[in-house]
Image 1 (tube, rainbow, N blue to C red):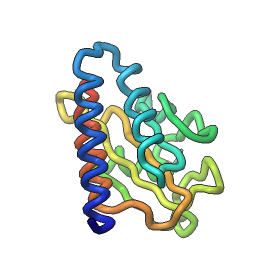
Image 2: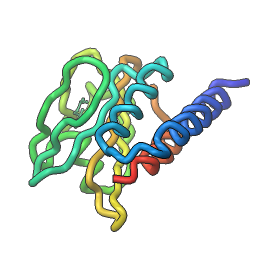
Image 3: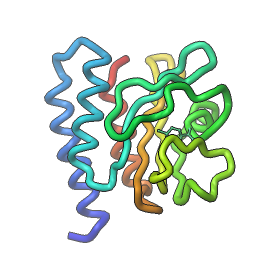
Length: 154
Ligand code: SME
């Protein structure tokens, strides 16, 4: 199996596992924490994974796994905000070349940010992942992570 095939198979396995684990969990924080734990421990190129939650014009860090992260992302600055305003996934191959990127940890080299929607299609949070390898993320990560965010049921 090639690299892409392995990635697809890995996301499929994780999705099924999470679908089963979250099916009768009524608590959103607990669901977010479980998603992070599974992703962080099962995907080797994930250096940091977590949620930033929208609250009164700021994005506040929610459950996460990995090194200490910025607690608040100020209004309209950085990649997470770009994802909120554009309402679509952002992939950054090399964060050090990105002027508007907020570096919480200098070891991060690439990043993907996926929007999380409520039932009315408003963005209420983002799922942010950093890798310590450059160009770690592609469309398969976007598809896999987007499908996982649909399990959140905010
Ligand atoms: N890089 C993000 C900030 C969050 S950290 O990556 C955990 C941004 O530019 O919004």
